[in-house]
Length: 247
Ligand SMILES: [Zn+2]
Image 1 (cartoon, rainbow, N blue to C red):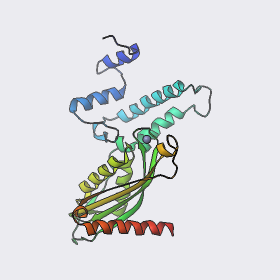
Image 2: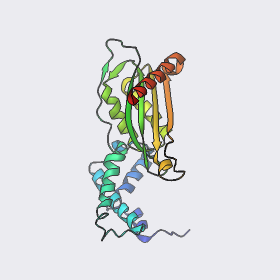
Image 3: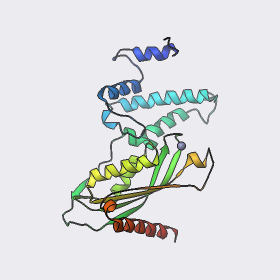
């Protein structure tokens, strides 16, 4: 089979380890060798070496610059797009997709010494993400219900972990599952319920251009799954929190 890749690309693929080659290729090869997944909504922060995030920023900026050129935008003469590539690279790696490249914010948990076991809800927590299919925003609200278990964490910590989990390219169904996994890991609740209501800009801005549609989904685990009255109580509390918002 003959290769149709441009020569610059194929030489980058075959350059030995020590030579400069795209840092993303180096990272991907390392992850492949270790059998570590790097899907759009995976966090790879523990597999990046010192300095690689800075190198990635330079590489991504170069690719965005080429994207703009491919879109026939005169970035050499257009003062508005002159530094867009650098801004977009920073935005992806350190803001909107930071949940892929940065470690989870430090969240301390404490033993549940008072043996609290009444449910409570936290919300609305603003969540911001981007759809994996179009990389356009998903913006919405999240409510978290907890029946405390072995450990407790501060209320603001739910916001921090949700922000970190959602700041990746996602589909909403998976985002909610990943958030549930992280919260279970942090505080081992007896019951956990999460509800997310979000608007998808790939439906509002493009495609069917439906401005009002939102997607609502939820996950219930532990006692919330086993006990229908507890599950109903969660949705009732969320409804009340929502009603307070609009009054
Ligand atoms: Zn989409």
